[in-house]
Length: 524
Ligand code: GDP
Image 1: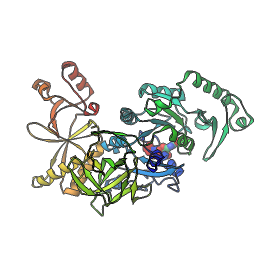
Image 2: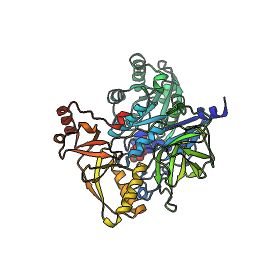
Image 3: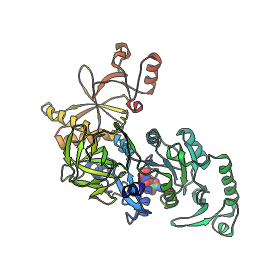
Image 4: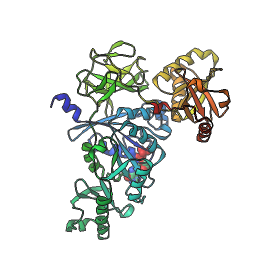
């Protein structure tokens, strides 16, 4: 195996997707602990403890104790290099959350066992599903009385429309939680509260003394029945399906008690994929190709308030990145030397000299880059496929408070829209500016940055619309439009209809069945 191949094979780049409070932060912490990256829990994110995590850079993040933009953590585990990309959620939810999922090779879906599938999990899951990447499920909070495990599996299959394969199976739950049975390793992991688990071999049938010592006897017959039920009636394990994202292996555990986390992660490595080829204008770009290439999935401003810098996050796709190398940006044809580059560790961002496919590097940006840009090291020139655009779900009219500042307003608007902070629309006649976002936070960050970086105070006007659909201009008729169906133009001048809600949207479809409505999200 070549060095490049070894480096690629040993890498795993993934994101954890979940609904807020399912336990993503707690699980991330435990994974970092496994990798020896942090000494004690509570260092990843301190939204509840008042401490601030290393990933909280911007001032607004500090004020709110949240992580505005997705951050990256790297650690090594069992001869592998692991990159975890954080995906902020809930009020922190933004297009960055979605875009981060375009830069990973697999995903871990954390589900709160007491609640089942929640709204945000579903949204993020859909993006992962569209990409066809492996998705592993961790059902959390088994130390609490939750939903029946079979019901949870059913919910996964029905709501998410993906096959499931329970890789581990819980024995009891809540106060009576005994542990889990691992169908891969044929061991019972015995739950002992905050103490380290004990592992005992079990073939699924034969009751040994050791098993009886550790698992309450009334749970054993049920366990044996359930294991045989899963074998007979459950889905068959199929690694190829896992790799294509058609079957999700399911693990049960308790992140807070650090139970089931290590067994989960040991299985994670063989079940997920190393960095994969990526499609570009010249065809597939393999991570083993010689020339360096990567794409920008996020641009973040002011990570260090002392320096007004912007950092472009690059996912390395092929070749080797070396600090100081010269790259070209096919979009503009310009070349630049990447002298300042960073890699993200759990505790700090450090200068990186070398990075391999799958790694995420941060490069200093003085305004050259846009979201989705390809950068290339060699003499070739190609561009990776465009990143999908995610249809916004909330809109605000925006104007500058002080008309004297209009020039600054225009400049800031252009810049921030280019960065992908928000989406911009205009009304065709009055040329009102309308901002679109997938999360409220995008507006707040926009407002904050317009003031901080461009000295512009804004006035927002709330809009009732929540659904955006693109429509061929020639199909628009005046009679289709009213206050609940608004015609606007996107940044490229394409026509978009904004609908107030799902009801209005469906009514419109019924009334005008011949109109072609698309989300750019599906257009991909
Ligand atoms: P996030 O919003 O998904 O990042 O969730 P957190 O990791 O911050 O966890 C949300 C809450 O659930 C916190 O109060 C955690 O202490 C708690 N929690 C996380 N994992 C578990 C678990 O396994 N069992 C129980 N009982 N609580 C948990």
